[in-house]
Length: 270
Image (cartoon, rainbow, N blue to C red; front, side, top):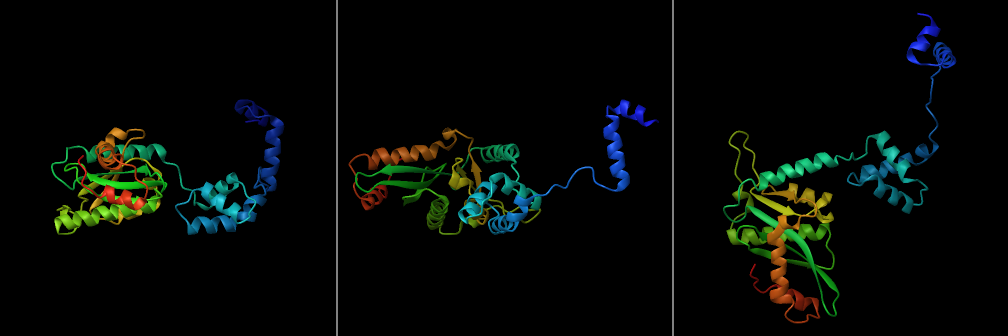
């Protein structure tokens, strides 16, 4: 086929095709690779930060690099991580579908006894002189039993882990044995299945890597998050906070955090 006819068939200007043909014969690439001075200058620093902190996204890595006085932009950090295969891909829709599937599995049948579904969340209370304090609490969905309150000036991933540890200790005290003894065993594979589903909202502490790793290390527990902006799916926990505040904390002004903890330790009806 003549070159003119070929170019007309595929809509390519003949001069452009001739230029491509000349470069191909000479062994030269048509395009690139273009120089990347910004990436090459900061690649070692960004890769070191991403390797040391695999749970960080590119924005956190960029902020830490800027804190170390490296003049790098977020887009450059993103491209470096993508080149090195260290970028955390955004599987948002797939994650939502997986969470929805876990929610349906957790509530496929209503709980028939205690220690099957725990509901967990944070709340806060402002004292008259001692500032604002956050409380983390876990309640059993079936028995409405409160496993204790974890008071702290913060509501972060460390407080979430501490609250679950407090609930595990209280549950094992009541049962007089470990929670793992409640777990059923798969007869085919011999693997232990989680016995308790911990239900939370989509707050930052519950989406953190540390909290997820802690739950993964507890064979008796599995974690499920509710739908976004759906507090009714964690209703027992919300009702428990209301009972705590209206039956105990709102009756008299509380000045000191120690008085706050002492008042909260009294029995509460859900």
